[in-house]
Length: 231
Image (cartoon, rainbow, N blue to C red; front, top):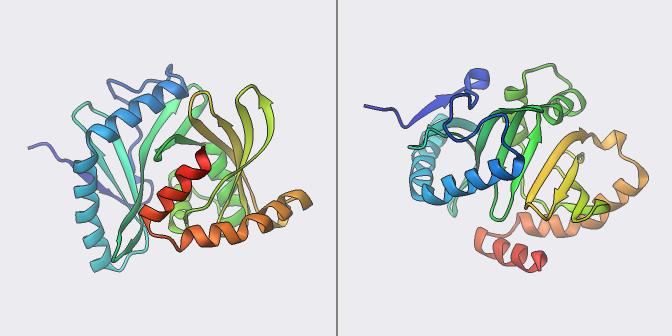
């Protein structure tokens, strides 16, 4: 019988390497389209598995849990469960894969796909965790403290493409760009609070009240606000 998933600890997470669908030559847009399709077509299966794993997580007293689930198309998803309460389970679902730019993590959201480079997680480990660790272990630690927040767009660097900064719980920023044409967001690096410029500090302070309000909403209310801000 084929195993549907694998409980993963630390660097035992596998990298997508033999998928029939995701190959290094694919563009981010192609990877995003594939992920959206896979998750949409397997949403119930993914949610059911997450619920089962969340119960095990609660029983073990864990604050973060990562596991993998292979779909029928041979796509290997990685799921990070980072929050459980009486309203449901919060988790990030996506895929680790090797591209022509190196190791990447692609996480599918409601409307777009967020791509994180290996460099982002390396900087997160160095500048916030103050430790030397693998990219996969750093990603798990990233989701250990993950919370919902609204990213801010800044300078336009190309038509339909803007710089973007995402405030994190630790006070630092995930930096990258938002490609509205292809509905993808790419985070390339992390800057700790101590290294932020004056404008970045002011942006974080300006957005603090909004993000605190978002973090106190349930999923349905958050979705309404998110939809309104996308208009």
